[in-house]
Image 1 (cartoon, one colour):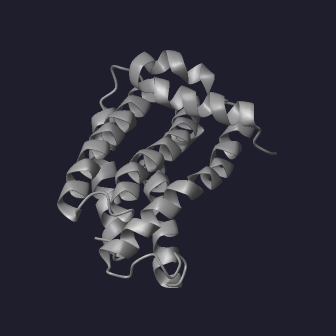
Image 2: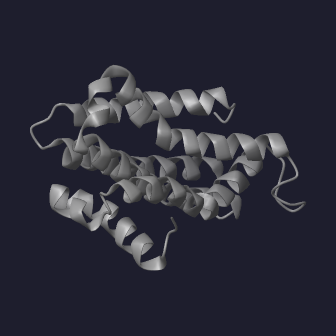
Length: 193
């Protein structure tokens, strides 16, 4: 099982289109069993976003980036773990509160779309992180920019849940709220707040 460039491009495009086309965009994702497992392999695509966010975290901690990004292994591990858990936490939460969903095709489609949109989300959050890490924005402005991009991420998460579980389902707003709470918990757990 591997990822090829066409699959990656189609999946990222499909996850982004969930915001405008809703469930119509789901078939752009590989909703098969192999597609499910490939969506986890795709976490490797978060590496550029991880580097940008790590650089911003080092800057915020007063460490600077001149000596290299990976000079503090604990911070590096915390950023990698936090980004991965931010994507994995909501599906895990959903399994905890509704274990019967695991057997449904809707859940499988949700996890696939959620994983791919997680890569898009990390990339979006890397934009203000990069601007801050390069010194092009002071901390206050970077925070405002991050809030703007976070609003887009929350909209994407809502659209993913709504597309996967249906427009009439009440689960989409619940998952957005859960994602906010879980993201905050992950950030606090790893000392990144």
